[in-house]
Length: 388
Image (cartoon, rainbow, N blue to C red):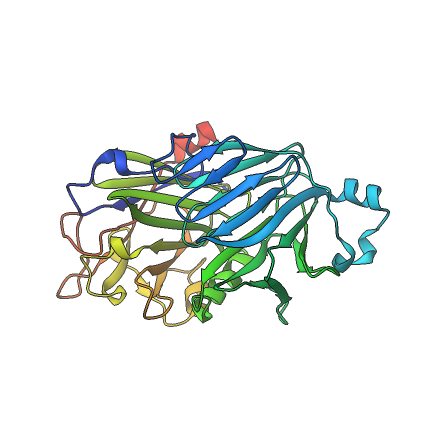
């Protein structure tokens, strides 16, 4: 049996004037009071990037960047839906329509994340980032999910079967499944998904032109279980906020604010196998670096190898050396995506930071890209806190 480990990822903020209170909570952290840029009122939520409402049985009027994406999103256990409608699993996903939905309530909220609980084992999480991530976690039971599109939007299943793409006036988005399941377009033109237990339906939204080949590769890594966590760092009204989305039941990520210069996250896995962490840093976090090409990654104080292809990146998992890639979605997007393939989960220190002028690794005191990520294993603490 694999040993359970806890890993602390620290984002090193090089701007000394940034107050500690500016560091927002992330997935796994306890509920926090919203910032002024966000509001939650009863069963309605309005954030910086994402807004939605909840009815008794669905998330309704889900919008990203001010543009409506879904009229409603509902989830119901497969057994209940098949019993109510008389359809069987052999009918196919295209026949799954009018999912009645489990009762939903806003359960917990941090500065960048809202968790929505259901009356069954399923839950949803909405992430208030530019990517507008919405996840549906099946929990212990198999589920059907139906997303009714907003007016003017349309959905298309990609030929490779990995994703369903939703196109609206100025945005596009993609549904993929992390774990067991299938996603498709039903007979009414909406999106339906069949989720096996402990699987996750993931929706990621993009501004016009952002869903490029790099974005599609990230979707593929999520769908095949290689990428299990996505970190997003941003500034809002001069304050630092961060978010983590996790894809799957075997990883949990929690942030801590311990100083003005550090944003720490604890990641726990119930297995030793490595994984890819997608770290997206917004434009305001890279003022100290001339370009995303200035970034480098170190593991246990040694420079990680830069991967020249996605196959090389994935090949690092289980190998002798961790690897990383840095990508950007077009010239207009100043944010950078750092894909870190941690080769295995034992006692590791991983850092993402600007490269020095001579190409060597930098320490905490050197200004630059503005964000670093370090990994430290805390085996004893994890054993006390995580059930096998």
